[in-house]
Amino acid sequence: MRFSRRLDSLPEYLTTRLNRRVAERRALGRDVISLGVGDPDLPPPEEARAALAAAVRRPDVAHYPTNRGIAPLREAVARFYAERFGVAIDPDTEVMPLLGAKEGLAHLALAQLDPGDVALVADPGYPVYAGGPTLAGAEAFGLPLLAANGFQPDLPAVPADVRARANLVIIGYPNNPTGAVAADGLFADLAGCGIPVCHDNAYSEITFDGYVAPSYLATAGARDSGIEILSLSKAFSLPGWRIAFAVGNAAMIANLHRLKTNVDAGMFVALQEAAIALLDLPASVRRAVADVYERRRNLACELLTAAGVAVDVPRAGMYIWLAVPDGSDSLAFAERMLTQADVVVSPGVAYGAAGEGYVRLALTQPDDRLGEAVRRMTRAL
Ligand SMILES: *Cc1c(COP(=O)(O)O)cnc(C)c1O
Image (cartoon, rainbow, N blue to C red; front, side):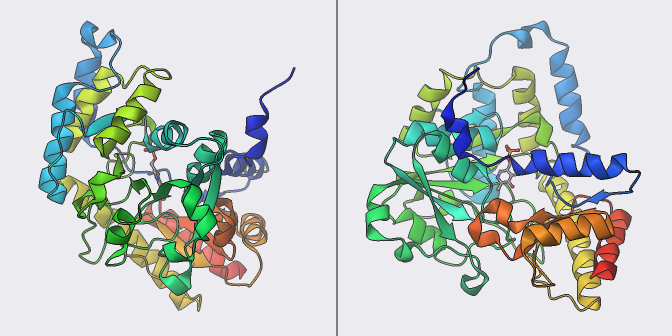
């Protein structure tokens, strides 16, 4: 059988590979602790589970949804943006549900890019940033996020011929995997760069030390040529529910809507109703989740520091972006941790060439297991 060559241009998806390696070790009877995949271990809020359960019992939710989403959901997103970010959005034209940020990012590339076009994408970055444009037949050009630059992109360093072909920038802060937050002025630079921007916002609610993450859309001019993707996966610990939103520039959203009407039929209405319940929860619910990650961040960083391992303490997110302590490459170090410590970490190179020299530790284990994992790692060093 012959298959599309399109897929040959993509590497094997990181999560698929990590899951296989863990299964292999566990089959050998090893007690493997995974700090690999960023899959929250906390339960979703009870209010949303109750809303979903109640909605599922109603026969009317079994009908096809629409790609635009129900009006009360779009209004709930507008309320959230107003209250949380101080950003006014038009619920009729400036918001659309997505079946997770990953779906939205992949389809945005397809809706936005032609062969010959370039997408400027964070490197290291969430794999779909490069995968989406590649599948669209366009070219993904990495914006290196380096420690020397505080993990901020250097737009002026993009060669002029590449920049001339660029029709999308994909980046997000608080950043995965580096843990960096947006530097002052970065969002203004993006808004003024003359290229459509997609700001991937998955971690605005998981911040530490009193830091409050802004929305990209709060920046003057951002909405003229940009959207933000707000995912509920991490803030509310329900990545399997697949709830996210495209928010911002009405033309970009209308164009993405046009594509999606040809691809999917929108979000299950019961999930849309649960999403309303989530968005209307008091801020204290999101803060309680962030507090758990803040405590785990402290625990992991204290154990690493006490063992003499240099670590950059992140102010947001669910990860530690650790410079490989033994000077080996990230794949070799990840493999060494798996075989010598029974701990899974993500090799930085899986997020792009500029991720080489780092591994990512996900803080998605209960405190005792996280502590045990970091102790095993430092003992193996
Ligand atoms: C986890 C994550 C998302 C969320 O993706 P969903 O598809 O909404 O679950 C988006 N972007 C980044 C950078 C992430 O780490």
